[in-house]
Structures are given as C-alpha cells and as structure tokens.
Image 1 (cartoon, rainbow, N blue to C red):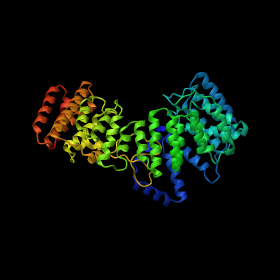
Image 2 (cartoon, one colour):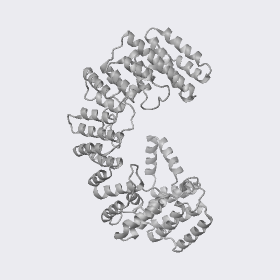
Image 3 (cartoon, rainbow, N blue to C red):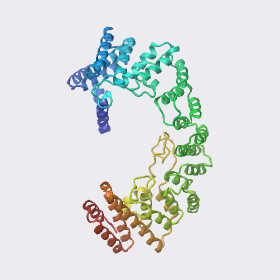
Image 4 (cartoon, rainbow, N blue to C red):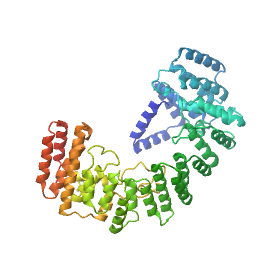
Length: 550
C-alpha cells in the first residue's frame, strides 16, 4: 500500500468513533461467508485505480498466508528473461513507465506468495537495485513509492527472505548482508530479521543457528567511530538482542558506549521490572556516555529504579540528576521529593541556587522564588530578552506566571489564569526515554517519577510579598511585557502579537486586582500610543484589554 493511501486510511481511522467500530464488527459478524465474498468482489470491482489494485494485493496476500493452503498461480519461468531484457533496455534510455515496474514487482510478489522463491528472487534482484540506485527514472520527485502502488518495503523484505532461504547456512550471513546493501537505496531495513518475519508465511528456518553467525558477520564489518547511528548499528543491535538477550545488549553497550546502545540495555531491564539490575546498569550507563543530556536521562532512570526498590536515597539520586543535566523538570522533582515541608524546601532551593548554572536564568529565577527571594526573581524576569520565549530555557513564561500568581492569584476566566496555566501543570520535557518517567497516568502505565507543578511548591513555601516587594514585582512584570512588545514588533513576529498583548493586559489586571487600576491603565495607554503604527498589534491589545477582570 502506498504512503498516500496509508495516510488516508490512518486519518479515516482517527475519525471513527467506538460506536462506528462496534457497528462494523456487528455487521461483519452478521454476514455469512458467501455474503461477505459477494460483497468483497463487488466492492473491489467498484474501486478506482490504484485503490482496486492495492485492495486486491492485500486480499491475495491475506489468503495466501491464511490457513486454507491456497496459493496464487505460479508465474511462467519465461518472465525472468522478459524482465531482464526490459531492465536492460530501460537502463539504456534511463527511464521507464512506473506501471510496468508495478506489474513486474507484483508478479514477483505473486511468485513469492506461491512459494516459487527462486523466480521471486530473480525478479527482485533484477528490479530492486535498478530502481533503488536510480538507474531507471520513474518520474518520482523523491522516492519511488510516490509513483508505485506496490509496497516497495515489503518487496525488499521478501527479497531478503528469498536470499535467506536459498543460501546454505554457512554462507547465509554474507549473502544476506550483500542483499541488504543491494536494496539500501530503496528501503531502510534497520531490523531485517523482524522485516523478514513480518512478510514470511512461517518461522525463518534455522534462525537460532543463523543468529550467532549473523552477529559475528556484522561485528566483523568495520564502521566509523561515531555517536550517530547507521542502519548497520541497528542491525547489529537487533541481532545481538535476538541472539543473546539482555546479556548481549549489556556487552554491546559497554563496548560501543553509544547512547542508543546503552539506552537499549537499561530499558530492557526496566521493561522486565528487573529493578536491582536496572539500578546498577543505569549507574554504570551514566559513566559510559559523554553527553550531559544522556547522563541526566540515565540518572533519572537510576532514581526511578531506586524508587521502585524502596530505597532511601531517591532524593539524593534526583539531586544528582539535577546537577548532572540541569532542567526545570529535574529541579522540581528534586526539591519536591518526599513531600518536604516549607523549611526543607527552602533549604534545598538555597543549596540549589549556589550550584545553579549561571547561563540558565529560568532555573536561577525559580530557585530564588522557592527560596523566598522574590526581588531577585523579579530582577531576573526584568532582564529577560523580549524574544526567545518559545525556547525552553527562557525565563519569561515561568517567572512571569509565577510572579503574577504570587501577586494576584489566578481566578477562573481571568487573564492571570491563562498566564498561570504554565505553572499549574508539570513542565513539558523531551528528556523522557522509552520508559516514561513523568507524572503517573492511568492504571497500567509504567512506573514514573513524579514531577510536582511549580505552583504546588510555591503554595508550600508561600514567599512573602511586602509593599516594596510588590512594587518591584510590578515593575518587573511591566519590563518583561514591554520587552516582549518591543521584540515582536521590531521583528514583525505577527504570530506573537496576541501573546505580547496578553502580557500587557495581564499587568493591567494585576494592578487592578491590587486596588490601583489607574497606573496600569496609564502605562498600557502609553504603550498603545507608542506603537500606534502597528494596527494588528493595536487590535490584539484592544481585545486583550477588554478581557481584563479586577
């Protein structure tokens, strides 16, 4: 099935409701076998091309792999010679009709499904390299599946099966590697064993004997020393895992020290709930990798394993993860670990502030807030640049929301509630690897590390706000809003005009909630006059100011 059809079907499935699926199941169950056959024949006949051919291919494959024993008719042996002549002629002129290639590949598929692996192999070996290496142009813009209706990835996997089954065990590893290289320009097969099993009609013969040879052959292939992964690295890891299990993944991780290999080893143990082994593996993994980001992920995993084992050092491990790769998620996990009281929370924040990376104003500002140093946090917000708010390390979103909440709360339907939403939920993170580690979800989810929302910790610490502190915070909020307006208007960032207007209106609302609406209104009016040449921003600001609630 082509990619455009797969996308279309996915979109249709996404729009189906549970009632639709139940009704379909009931309707299919109500049809007799003869009625279903009659319907399918008529339905396929009514389809337009290429949908009709794709549907027919799917039905033929399903029938050939079913339990009835039916197989499509065996192709004539002459077809191989005809295709070879066609390919030679097409290579000479440099192009071919994609319909002809579709037809020949479909004949190769039928031969494969019929059990004639020799004919199928000959056809695949003739066609796939020619179109994969672009010896024959089919008129595609980028990939051949744009112009072919046959499933090219399945063809490549079936070709591997024909090579696998036709080659003696002692020579099979080298033959399979050569076949993979042949189709490399056409199909990415990072897990060839799984791909062959997917298109096979039964278990691959002698797989347990083949896997050690396959590992040895892949191990013998020289590859550049790099951190990013190639198809070869994926194939080796699949072979090692299938042949040796977790012990093989451990051996590979220690040898390559590549983050993905190390991750696979640790994840395999965690998915098996072998938490004691996972703890040791994650601790070692943090020493194997060189990237701080990867090191932080493994320290996260070690804390999760310690949590699952009921160890007393979970908080210390969360602190180590925060120091290893500082982020807002790790900071909140550490300072909020174990439901600390206000005194302990402030103590942790003070300790964290001493080691906070100076290049991260967001983390420094949060630690100042949690430690009760509201003026310092306000000063950090006031110095934040007007652009870059979408960057995860920018201090704007979190500090503006925190200080606004601290001064005037976040009543429902207010602008303050819109701004404060970012601190009322755990922060988004891309640090979570295969085993999800953020807040616990529905029953049956894997174990996770809890990440308390920032507002929960602020409620626990209750930073003091004096009259002077309030004035400093109001100035900081105005400075941040002004810088945001200056930045987005200077660069004509029209998509961010609404956000800049929201910040201005929120400042007005905060001052109105404090009982002195006039200064905020005068300040906003001055901004309107200053940027009167920007009608789109003026409209966004008027709309935002109309939503101000005292």
